[in-house]
Image 1: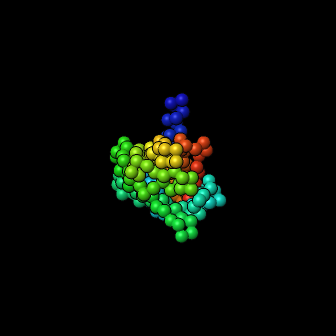
Image 2: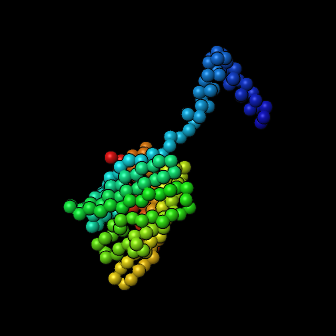
Image 3: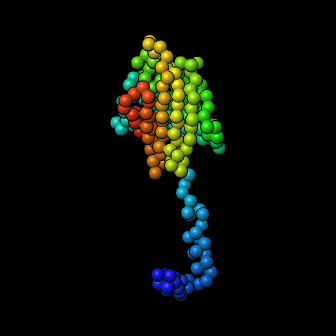
Length: 190
């Protein structure tokens, strides 16, 4: 097998030598092995994203949701803007990606404000954030306390934000310990 491989390699290099000059051959090899050509483009979550309601889990009681993401070195900022007519709400998370987990204070838990559950524990959440899938997925593991008419309830949330190959669609998958079905939301870059 080795002899066959050596013969094929010799024939291929001979063909290349006849086709290209030595300088041209070296230039072609350098170009083909260039890190710039071999490297994948960095996934770019940064920017503003608007929900595609047709492709998403219902957003009740909200009619609109936008996400703004900013990334600077090891810091990620995620702002979610909820809207329904004149009623608006905002949730901001500033995350340090070098920490295994961190306490984040947010403005409120707006995902289901109409069910009478509010963010307790002084609006603090414990968040473990990490990059997955070579930077194409941002996973947030969130622990929080919700206050309801029945008392305080600990809730775990896993929120994955997945960037499409073309970088124009952001899909969020959210699984909550308090909900049997996942929440899937699709966003388009704006």
